Image 1 (cartoon, each protein chain N blue to C red):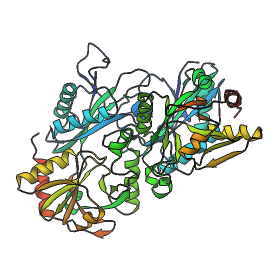
Image 2 (tube, rainbow over the protein chains, first blue to last red):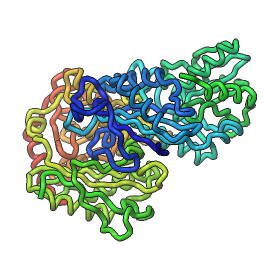
Image 3 (cartoon, rainbow over the protein chains, first blue to last red):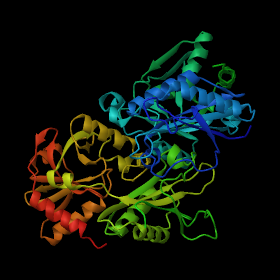
Image 4 (cartoon, helix red, strand yellow):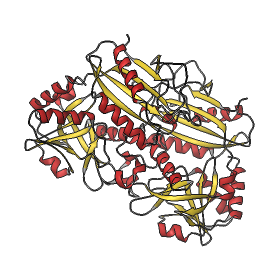
Length: 296
Length: 296
């Protein structure tokens, strides 16, 4: 066992030629050595997709939801369809090999591969998660930032790849730096026509009049695996849930809100653009207890 | 000498710790081996910048213009400033080591480095260019595609990184695939408010009433090194040049137009959205002769 683990897939997509026809589904590799060529299109063009999966006590959470989104993201990029059985086996093996820690994560990456070879590159990397206690218990401040797109670009202009979880995340990281420059912890993207979209690496959930509301997922944002499970929790608790178009006015009127994602889980929002926001820490604790106890 | 060459920079940014304090500015590496870790942010987040430089008979073209843009792109991403002297030395050494071919290219890449290490990764890769004769002499068809942004986002929303040459090029590659699906060779991006922007990896130049016109470079597009040199050619020939806001109507009214970029140089456009477009093949040849004869 080791504290970081890396498995390189031999044939990440069934339709592509395997790296080694004799090899198993994946090969163990040393995480801190070099495994990628400089002309891999994942690197030169951000041309690939990924998932980040929470691993609790060695158990990957929301695995099938992550695998489903991985396949949908790949399809949006016209990548050869990931061989889900091979990926599932690799993820489970990586999680089993990881040092026993309470919270870790597994990152799956599929790229278009080295330019000219026509063979995708794929791997699963896992490591312990940084401590998330502070974000979960004290909350986070967010600022709203223009995403530059209308809320309907996913439908009108699919080549903009909104709704796909791609390796081209430079804008997300720049927005995160801008949020920090403004004294916040994260950014919440807003469409040019005034709809609240998503965080830089998380979904928004609001509590409004006893209901849980999240932005509709057909407006160029990711369908969140953690968000879906928070809604599962809510339904189990008798809390009504809804996917809606959310405006900045709606945001101001919310009783409580969270950014939810893998690794961090539910982080209550204490400030929006410098304005204090009520937090529901009791509910936050129940949500995180639910999320951390997921068995699948 | 060899047909592909790779130099890995020891200290791509002066402010960052070198990989090896005893080493030279760069280290020769085998281009077809693995040199990048899976947790390099250039790979996991498309978080880095690049340049592609034409190399004619072993001589890098528009080198200072490329280096200047490389530095400006890095600044837009808050990357530690590239050590231009080290990069220049590495590029010149790589070009000198390349097998003697008429046309090659050198690609410089600077990434934020392996997550958590705080040390950027940088390299120069060079290889012979594919034959560009057909695009240069027979021309290319383009389709116009929505870029999803207004023409002023570079000013209003700098975190969208428009105008920076980043590794997050998945949208450019998806637009290129969409163009091919529509029977064209390349796409020309248009802003949501109707201004023609740039190609997926090239700038547009139009010949209009004896003048050369290119879209203004403050509207979220790259300032093209090849475009600048075509304007240098034009001025030398007594042809007036202008940077303007260009609409689709202006495009339809052009006498001739080109997509210009490193490697391909000037490719005349024979079709826009399926409508035939007059080409000026004599002028195209003179432009490409000028570009391929550049001494710096």
